[in-house]
Amino acid sequence: MDKIVMNTPIVEMDGDEMTRVLWKMIKDELILPFVDLKTEYYDLGLSNRNETDDQVTIDSAMAVKKYGVAVKCATITPNAARIKEYNLKEMWKSPNGTIRAILDGTVFRAPIIVKGIEPYVQNWKKPITIARHAYGDVYKAVEIKVPGAGKAELVFTGEDGTVIREVINDFAGPGILQGTHNLTSSIESFARSCFNYAIDSKQNLFFATKDTISKKYDHTFKDIFEEIYENEYNKKFEDAGIEYFYTLIDDIPQG
Image (cartoon, rainbow, N blue to C red; front, side):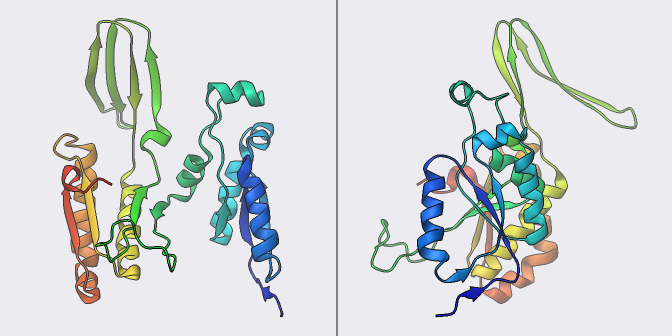
């Protein structure tokens, strides 16, 4: 049997520990006998990320931008114990977070349907896909371990000199702080990728936030989704026979 010929390589992101073993087995037994595999290889194992000062992670993401497709194995995001175990220069950031930020992508968790294996919830007849925004938030968070009493403030200084200042908390003693951000352009990209995925897969789209509590951060997500849907996707959803539905995150079933 002739092997399938690839015209464009895929980006191959090797991983850590057992994933390196499993990925090699998958290639050797399930891919290479049937496909003339062409890849651009990047070793995202923790030791190599440390050796390259994590430049290999950035390079792999840029390669994905170039070729448009990649296979990534699971990787380690180090904690204090891993720094000692691997003798790391520093506590390197999540490779997934770095790659997602560069690609401005959306993570879709889609179910894998296997013939002969019945769904755990028997009355669910349609697949449920989970979409997660892949930029900002905790992956780009700035954190402070507060040493003692003092005032914490959130300050924005505009290029035009405008200053917006909000008090976060008056600390009476030690505590912790975390600042997160997002970009309007990235939220818009996230919204369009969700709408397009729903149309391509003929799935209804449910979107939920905690906008009753987060009246600016989460509410901005809600407003952007609604505006893009009404201006660009309302008719497309009608033609596809699917619906877009917004609700408070408390009302989304938790599994």
